[in-house]
Image 1 (cartoon, rainbow, N blue to C red):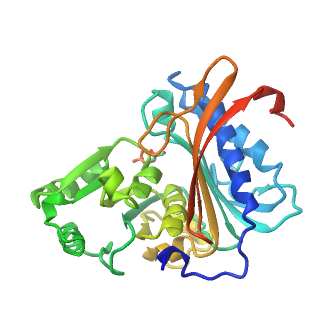
Image 2: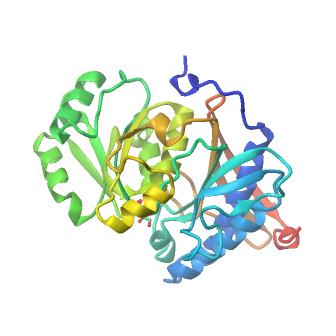
Length: 332
Ligand code: VTB
């Protein structure tokens, strides 16, 4: 049985919304892709935000942004708490990262995506934009194979054993940051490989779900918390294990988190704490990457590639779309 569907919910999100999410991330991806390689992260992000918000507001949902562009005072659009949709449909939580990997897009480097999740109301962790310690592996391993509180050595060894290989056949994906220097050298000392990424750890976590295709067995290290929740949503759909812990190392961060309902600032969240209900996650490639192809522009056609995950059934769809007369339908 697919471990992704062991959570039963009374409030399964209508499956037609799966396709609606695809439209939303497609529009955001195309808008930011027009600004690929221009060296302007802000403009690319803003284009994605505008497009995503406009599309979201066409949907028959009563949505609330729980993971967004920031808190109300700092983000004019898609701020946490903003209502989206026409208010007439199901009550849902919305998590967005309209342009995940803004730097990648600004530099036209691989791996930027437009990504969002829609979940049953009240089921996504309301995380402030702080760092999160994360660990994730794909499906098929015994529960508890890895743990945030175990040493990197123990995690790699236990994972290798569960996979039936030696540690030198394990590859970990880690963000290339000075803060990870010790983690990287400890994992390498065991003989395991490290794939470094400069940005884009939503996809990084998702890669663990298919080690045979991606070569990635485990995600380790510290990334952003909102990206952690989005990645958890996708992992919920395909199975796998993940833990996250917010890094609330100042009184200011602790009070922001508390205002969002975080009672215990040191809490270790499991996958089902990060995304506990029915969830749909969609991502469209902006620049080419290992997860998705980027947007292609030709004279009359714009091509996009999107992957959409649905937890109710564990279905994953890849949708390659050709858009014609794109601008004409822009404000529809
Ligand atoms: C990661 C990365 C994201 O933020 O989550 C990172 O995957 C964490 O922050 O694409 P630092 O860059 O400060 O390390 C992003 O780069 C997005 O902002």
